[in-house]
Image (cartoon, rainbow, N blue to C red; front, side, top):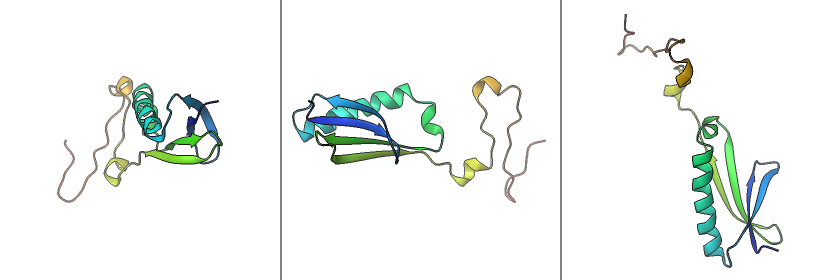
Length: 106
Protein backbone atom coordinates (compact mmCIF):
# COMPACT_ATOMS: atom_id res chain seq x y z
CA UNK A 1 0.00 0.00 0.00
CA UNK A 2 1.27 3.49 -0.89
CA UNK A 3 2.28 5.68 1.96
CA UNK A 4 0.79 8.76 0.23
CA UNK A 5 -1.89 9.32 -2.39
CA UNK A 6 -2.79 12.19 -4.66
CA UNK A 7 -6.53 12.68 -5.10
CA UNK A 8 -8.17 14.76 -7.80
CA UNK A 9 -11.53 15.74 -6.39
CA UNK A 10 -14.38 18.15 -6.08
CA UNK A 11 -15.79 19.27 -2.76
CA UNK A 12 -18.10 16.26 -2.70
CA UNK A 13 -16.27 13.30 -4.25
CA UNK A 14 -12.94 11.90 -5.39
CA UNK A 15 -12.61 11.54 -9.18
CA UNK A 16 -9.23 9.86 -9.24
CA UNK A 17 -6.79 8.52 -6.68
CA UNK A 18 -3.15 7.95 -7.57
CA UNK A 19 -0.61 6.32 -5.27
CA UNK A 20 2.59 8.31 -4.88
CA UNK A 21 6.01 6.69 -4.77
CA UNK A 22 7.24 9.22 -2.19
CA UNK A 23 8.66 7.99 1.08
CA UNK A 24 8.25 11.28 2.99
CA UNK A 25 5.99 14.34 2.95
CA UNK A 26 8.55 16.52 1.17
CA UNK A 27 8.84 14.01 -1.68
CA UNK A 28 5.04 13.70 -1.80
CA UNK A 29 4.71 17.47 -2.24
CA UNK A 30 7.30 17.53 -5.04
CA UNK A 31 5.75 14.55 -6.82
CA UNK A 32 2.32 16.19 -6.57
CA UNK A 33 3.63 19.53 -7.92
CA UNK A 34 5.11 17.76 -10.94
CA UNK A 35 1.84 15.87 -11.49
CA UNK A 36 -0.12 19.15 -11.20
CA UNK A 37 2.02 20.72 -13.92
CA UNK A 38 1.25 17.77 -16.19
CA UNK A 39 -2.44 17.95 -15.29
CA UNK A 40 -2.64 21.64 -16.19
CA UNK A 41 -0.84 21.04 -19.48
CA UNK A 42 -3.09 18.16 -20.47
CA UNK A 43 -6.31 19.94 -19.41
CA UNK A 44 -5.43 23.48 -20.52
CA UNK A 45 -8.86 24.12 -22.08
CA UNK A 46 -10.91 22.70 -19.18
CA UNK A 47 -9.39 24.87 -16.43
CA UNK A 48 -11.16 27.95 -17.80
CA UNK A 49 -14.69 26.71 -17.00
CA UNK A 50 -15.16 28.67 -13.75
CA UNK A 51 -14.86 25.51 -11.69
CA UNK A 52 -12.70 24.77 -8.70
CA UNK A 53 -10.21 21.94 -9.09
CA UNK A 54 -8.83 20.41 -5.95
CA UNK A 55 -5.87 18.08 -5.51
CA UNK A 56 -5.22 16.57 -2.10
CA UNK A 57 -2.23 14.73 -0.72
CA UNK A 58 -3.46 12.09 1.70
CA UNK A 59 -1.75 9.57 3.90
CA UNK A 60 -2.43 5.83 3.79
CA UNK A 61 -5.39 6.27 6.17
CA UNK A 62 -7.01 8.86 3.89
CA UNK A 63 -6.21 11.83 6.13
CA UNK A 64 -5.76 14.98 4.02
CA UNK A 65 -2.29 16.44 4.56
CA UNK A 66 -2.36 19.15 1.90
CA UNK A 67 -5.02 20.58 -0.37
CA UNK A 68 -4.23 22.49 -3.56
CA UNK A 69 -7.07 24.57 -5.00
CA UNK A 70 -7.06 25.74 -8.60
CA UNK A 71 -9.85 28.15 -9.41
CA UNK A 72 -10.40 30.39 -12.39
CA UNK A 73 -12.95 33.16 -12.05
CA UNK A 74 -13.92 35.65 -14.72
CA UNK A 75 -13.30 39.25 -13.76
CA UNK A 76 -15.92 41.89 -14.45
CA UNK A 77 -13.91 43.20 -17.42
CA UNK A 78 -14.16 39.89 -19.29
CA UNK A 79 -17.79 39.18 -18.34
CA UNK A 80 -18.95 42.05 -20.57
CA UNK A 81 -17.23 40.66 -23.68
CA UNK A 82 -17.91 37.61 -25.79
CA UNK A 83 -15.13 35.08 -25.69
CA UNK A 84 -15.23 33.18 -28.95
CA UNK A 85 -13.43 29.89 -29.59
CA UNK A 86 -10.81 30.32 -32.37
CA UNK A 87 -12.69 27.99 -34.74
CA UNK A 88 -15.77 30.27 -34.56
CA UNK A 89 -14.02 33.65 -34.54
CA UNK A 90 -14.84 34.30 -38.20
CA UNK A 91 -18.57 33.66 -37.63
CA UNK A 92 -19.19 35.73 -34.52
CA UNK A 93 -18.79 39.43 -33.80
CA UNK A 94 -16.81 40.34 -30.74
CA UNK A 95 -18.68 42.45 -28.22
CA UNK A 96 -16.76 45.52 -27.13
CA UNK A 97 -17.70 46.98 -23.76
CA UNK A 98 -18.60 50.66 -24.01
CA UNK A 99 -17.83 53.15 -21.29
CA UNK A 100 -17.91 56.96 -21.30
CA UNK A 101 -14.17 56.97 -22.05
CA UNK A 102 -14.34 54.35 -24.85
CA UNK A 103 -16.52 54.49 -27.90
CA UNK A 104 -17.22 51.45 -30.10
CA UNK A 105 -15.47 51.36 -33.43
CA UNK A 106 -17.68 52.07 -36.47
